[in-house]
Length: 602
Ligand SMILES: Cc1cc2nc3c(=O)[nH]c(=O)nc-3n(C[C@H](O)[C@H](O)[C@H](O)COP(=O)(O)OP(=O)(O)OC[C@H]3O[C@@H](n4cnc5c(N)ncnc54)[C@H](O)[C@@H]3O)c2cc1C
Ligand SMILES: *[C@@H]1O[C@H](CO)[C@@H](O)[C@H](O)[C@H]1NC(C)=O
Ligand SMILES: *[C@@H]1O[C@H](CO)[C@@H](O)[C@H](O)[C@H]1NC(C)=O
Ligand SMILES: *[C@@H]1O[C@H](CO)[C@@H](O)[C@H](O)[C@H]1NC(C)=O
Image (cartoon, rainbow, N blue to C red; front, side, top):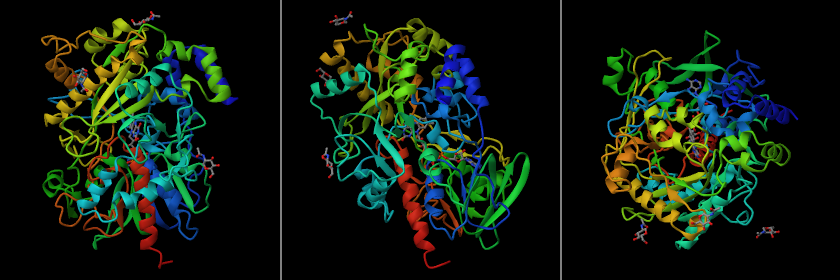
């Protein structure tokens, strides 16, 4: 009923701005706060994101252990669980609001040449902002991790943890030996598909591709997305791993921003310093500090605590405890947002039709079905190998979206992506309220590598993130191949039934090129890249021989005792697809490693 009332309020106010105010004002904390904050803990976990939530759940299974979970943000309200609204939350305080440094070769169509790099702040972390697409990656991704010297991380080693994490419910493939129905994290197909998404799958078959379970035996092919959705609602890390448990040995403090890891003269971590409601506090523990603040903030916290590149820390007057390559090896999946195909029928997702439409609202409220259950229009995907693919792994992903950048009339995506007025007004404003679909081609093994550094030793200042997008030209060329696949898909019978045709207004800055020529697309890709927000690698895992490794294959920080990092930052190379499933796997696996370490100790 509460859902119904709020939805009715949304309809009544009927503007996205009012809706945003509702989101912003509806913040409440977890209600599980601080039962024994003055006591000593066994473990302190920093960050209740994808990985941190798993750790809190699995470690508190041991009733003898006392666990403290510190999270800078708060509990999002239930609107966060309605998939279609996914984009809105990027415009709220549930986003840390980071931007990358101005780019030379990318983000040229964004304000000040800076792409946004949203990160979730709240119980659930970035899994409260994400598009919920669940892809594990390719077998060879993990076999490669192992071949780099990461003992215990081969596909055979990690598959049991992928399975352990999931509550899989996709009819038809449920019984596969690759899946499990009894984990915490829901994985389902979105209950509703637009006709266009079905056309995408049909187009794939027309072109000779298979429909696959991309998390099973064979990744290459087409599929509806498998998503972290249960009964039509988002399953964030917190809904999956924290809400179902209520354990007296787990303390969760929201609104608690960690500023430093405390490390003694023996280089042993023993506690953290944090700020809550403007009060600085210290809390200690007897076993380990587990850093799960994500690729950006885990690296930042290590450096603030004296673990990082010596010269860089000295420059900022931070006493160096451990010289280490924190902040290097930063990779991100980048794609292209600018492939919009116009159609001649009313079949795409247009915000004006959805939010103001009582029948779609009612369908959702009553049955958790219909267009509101689609994560912001992302419906299906394909993995394929271009002529550049170096091995048998697919090197491009095509993400199918049953809308485009104009489908919300510029109210959300335009702002979330920092599109310049010139670009939006020239290319997208003229087609507002018109039906269209898009494909975002995404390069899978980016060669451009970035670096994260601190701007100062002030813990409240954001770090400096320079991903160096497209500094390696291969990344653009692979996306360009993806563009060509997408155009071929639009020419199939399946899509021609809707009269699909490429939207051909040129992107400002690329007028000198003939529309749809290779050079036009290269220019367009640099102007309108899509950040997939899959950043990894700033706290790279590797064997002792790897001079860029910050943590060992047990995720222990080299040179420091009792400190592990457990989140996306440890990934030594990009998995194929989206990263979140892999991060849940890392959380599950780390929990077992920690239990193993302490099994003979009370
Ligand atoms: C818009 C968007 C769409 C995405 N879509 C997908 C998708 O469809 N599929 C997919 O697989 N991936 C997707 N991702 C990426 C994926 O969600 C993230 O990679 C993943 O959630 C990161 O998990 P993590 O545990 O590494 O960090 P996070 O989930 O970011 O957790 C870090 C937590 O630490 C907290 N924290 C940070 N600093 C401090 C501090 N100093 N003190 C206390 N707490 C702190 C943060 O508030 C946060 O809660 C998307 C990301 C975004 C932004
Ligand atoms: C899955 O397994 C169950 C129990 O073994 C069986 O009843 C069901 O028919 C199977 N479903 C499919 C689609 O194979
Ligand atoms: C697209 O289709 C054309 C014509 O059939 C073909 O020559 C080309 O190789 C295809 N491109 C890709 C990337 O599949
Ligand atoms: C859309 O275009 C296709 C291809 O030209 C055509 O067959 C179809 O009749 C058109 N539909 C409408 C509703 O105009």
